[in-house]
Each structure stands twice: as C-alpha cells, then as structure tokens.
Image (tube, rainbow, N blue to C red):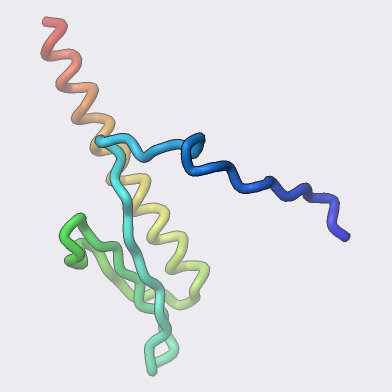
Length: 88
C-alpha cells in the first residue's frame, strides 16, 4: 500500500465550477515516424495556435507548460493594464 491517501469524489453540487474568465486549454503530444515528438496547443476554436517538435516527450511537455505560462502571464499583464487605466 502507498502512503498517499485517496480523496473521495465530491458530489457534483460541491465541485468547483470553471469561472467564465478561465480558459480550458487543449493540447496533444504524439510521436512522429522520425522519432521526434510533435506537440500542439489548441485555441478555443480547436485550431492549433502553437506547435513544434521536441526530442523527447518530457521536453514536449515542458514546452507546452512554457506556452501555457506565457499565455497566462500575457493575460494577467493585460488585466493589470486595464485595472491601472481605470484607476487613473
């Protein structure tokens, strides 16, 4: 047995809901015949917005995380800019 405890699933009424301003991000990582890993991040409409090749699956995952953080920090900077404009 492992030392990690498993959480019981919460009823649907008490689960946290996704806020309107939160974005669900879709991505894929798949091997290519040449031995590389193709990674893609999709926009809200299901179109690939960023993609690339990586030498390993772990590297592809790191590139996806990097893109997610970059996009979230850009959104946060835009939101902060709007707030400072309202305060002026």
